[in-house]
Image 1 (cartoon, rainbow, N blue to C red):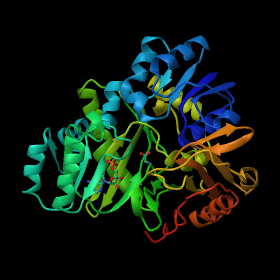
Image 2 (image 1 turned 30 degrees about the vertical axis):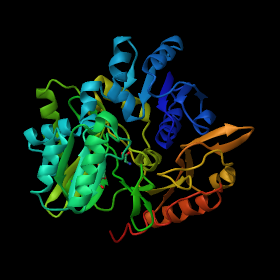
Image 3 (image 1 turned 90 degrees about the vertical axis):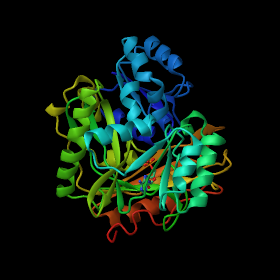
Image 4 (image 1 turned 180 degrees about the horizontal axis):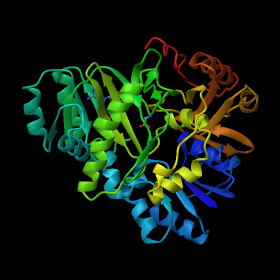
Length: 423
Ligand code: AMP
Ligand code: GLY
């Protein structure tokens, strides 16, 4: 099979790395890819949001399966376009991807299906949102309705922050159309957990759980990022919570999608808050998590390709997934300054030496080849994953590998998975 992976991050390198191990895959393309994916297959210089360019490439090169990494092309309808052209593709169609691309749509669906989530109000204009700020108690969480590169969620501790956030989103339109409508919701307390499910329209299979570290700096301080590290399995998950999650979230969600005439076929990634009252859904993502994927896939023993195919064909209930019992820890190395301004083009050294650490896998994100060197080309640069008999053992290995890698301004958190036992 010829497989095309769309995207250029660490998640896409991990997907490409896992798919390349399938005996059925004999050619791999990545669009646009990074220096890591270039070692596994052929990078194709087509952007992840150039839908017609991607479809043309898939057709001309007789690609048998396209796997979509990021959310943007899904929200733009890449799956609908590929299907119209008779091309096989993994991911939800545009209508199903609204679970992620419209937080208001997701919230209304959860409300009507009685899925436990934070209480929320929807606002279509700034005046009404400001009025609400005068009535409510704080903190609140303000969410832009649409996709905003992971920056559309603000926890407002007080009225002043809430009002300025409303103005930034709804009046100044910092996130464009995505912030025209907002949700203001109850701020939940608890610990977070990332779930991944292969959903085939009717049935689902859960992958192993993970937790990510969203803040830029140690001790969960600093601005929110795409994710500075992850570990798997999550230490706040249990059989009881899984049963609750399947009964209270997955079953009513699938039922509700069915009644709305929406067939969700792809990877569903609910972000959960485990509160003292049980599981609450914070959000639905319609794609693999980044960096969760880099922590989860190295633990997957099964071949990923047949699982993706079964998801597309509505047959995931015929499959079970085998896992490595060991834990994994993923440390993200980012460019200095990320998630704000950062420089690129810095030469990365020590990659080969780092790869020699036992049970370590280095996934590239913002990297590219230049004059025979691998240089930085983005905010998140590398995701270094290690397996170990315990989270602690995996953590020690991951940091040993990280210590062997250098580039100017490199920034990484030193406490990924650190308090995993205690939290
Ligand atoms: P989301 O994109 O909706 O997952 O939001 C990003 C992050 O904001 C989440 O991972 C949480 O850390 C936080 N968050 C979102 N909604 C809430 C909420 N209702 N209460 C507390 N924290 C939240
Ligand atoms: N790590 C969170 C996400 O991929 O949305």
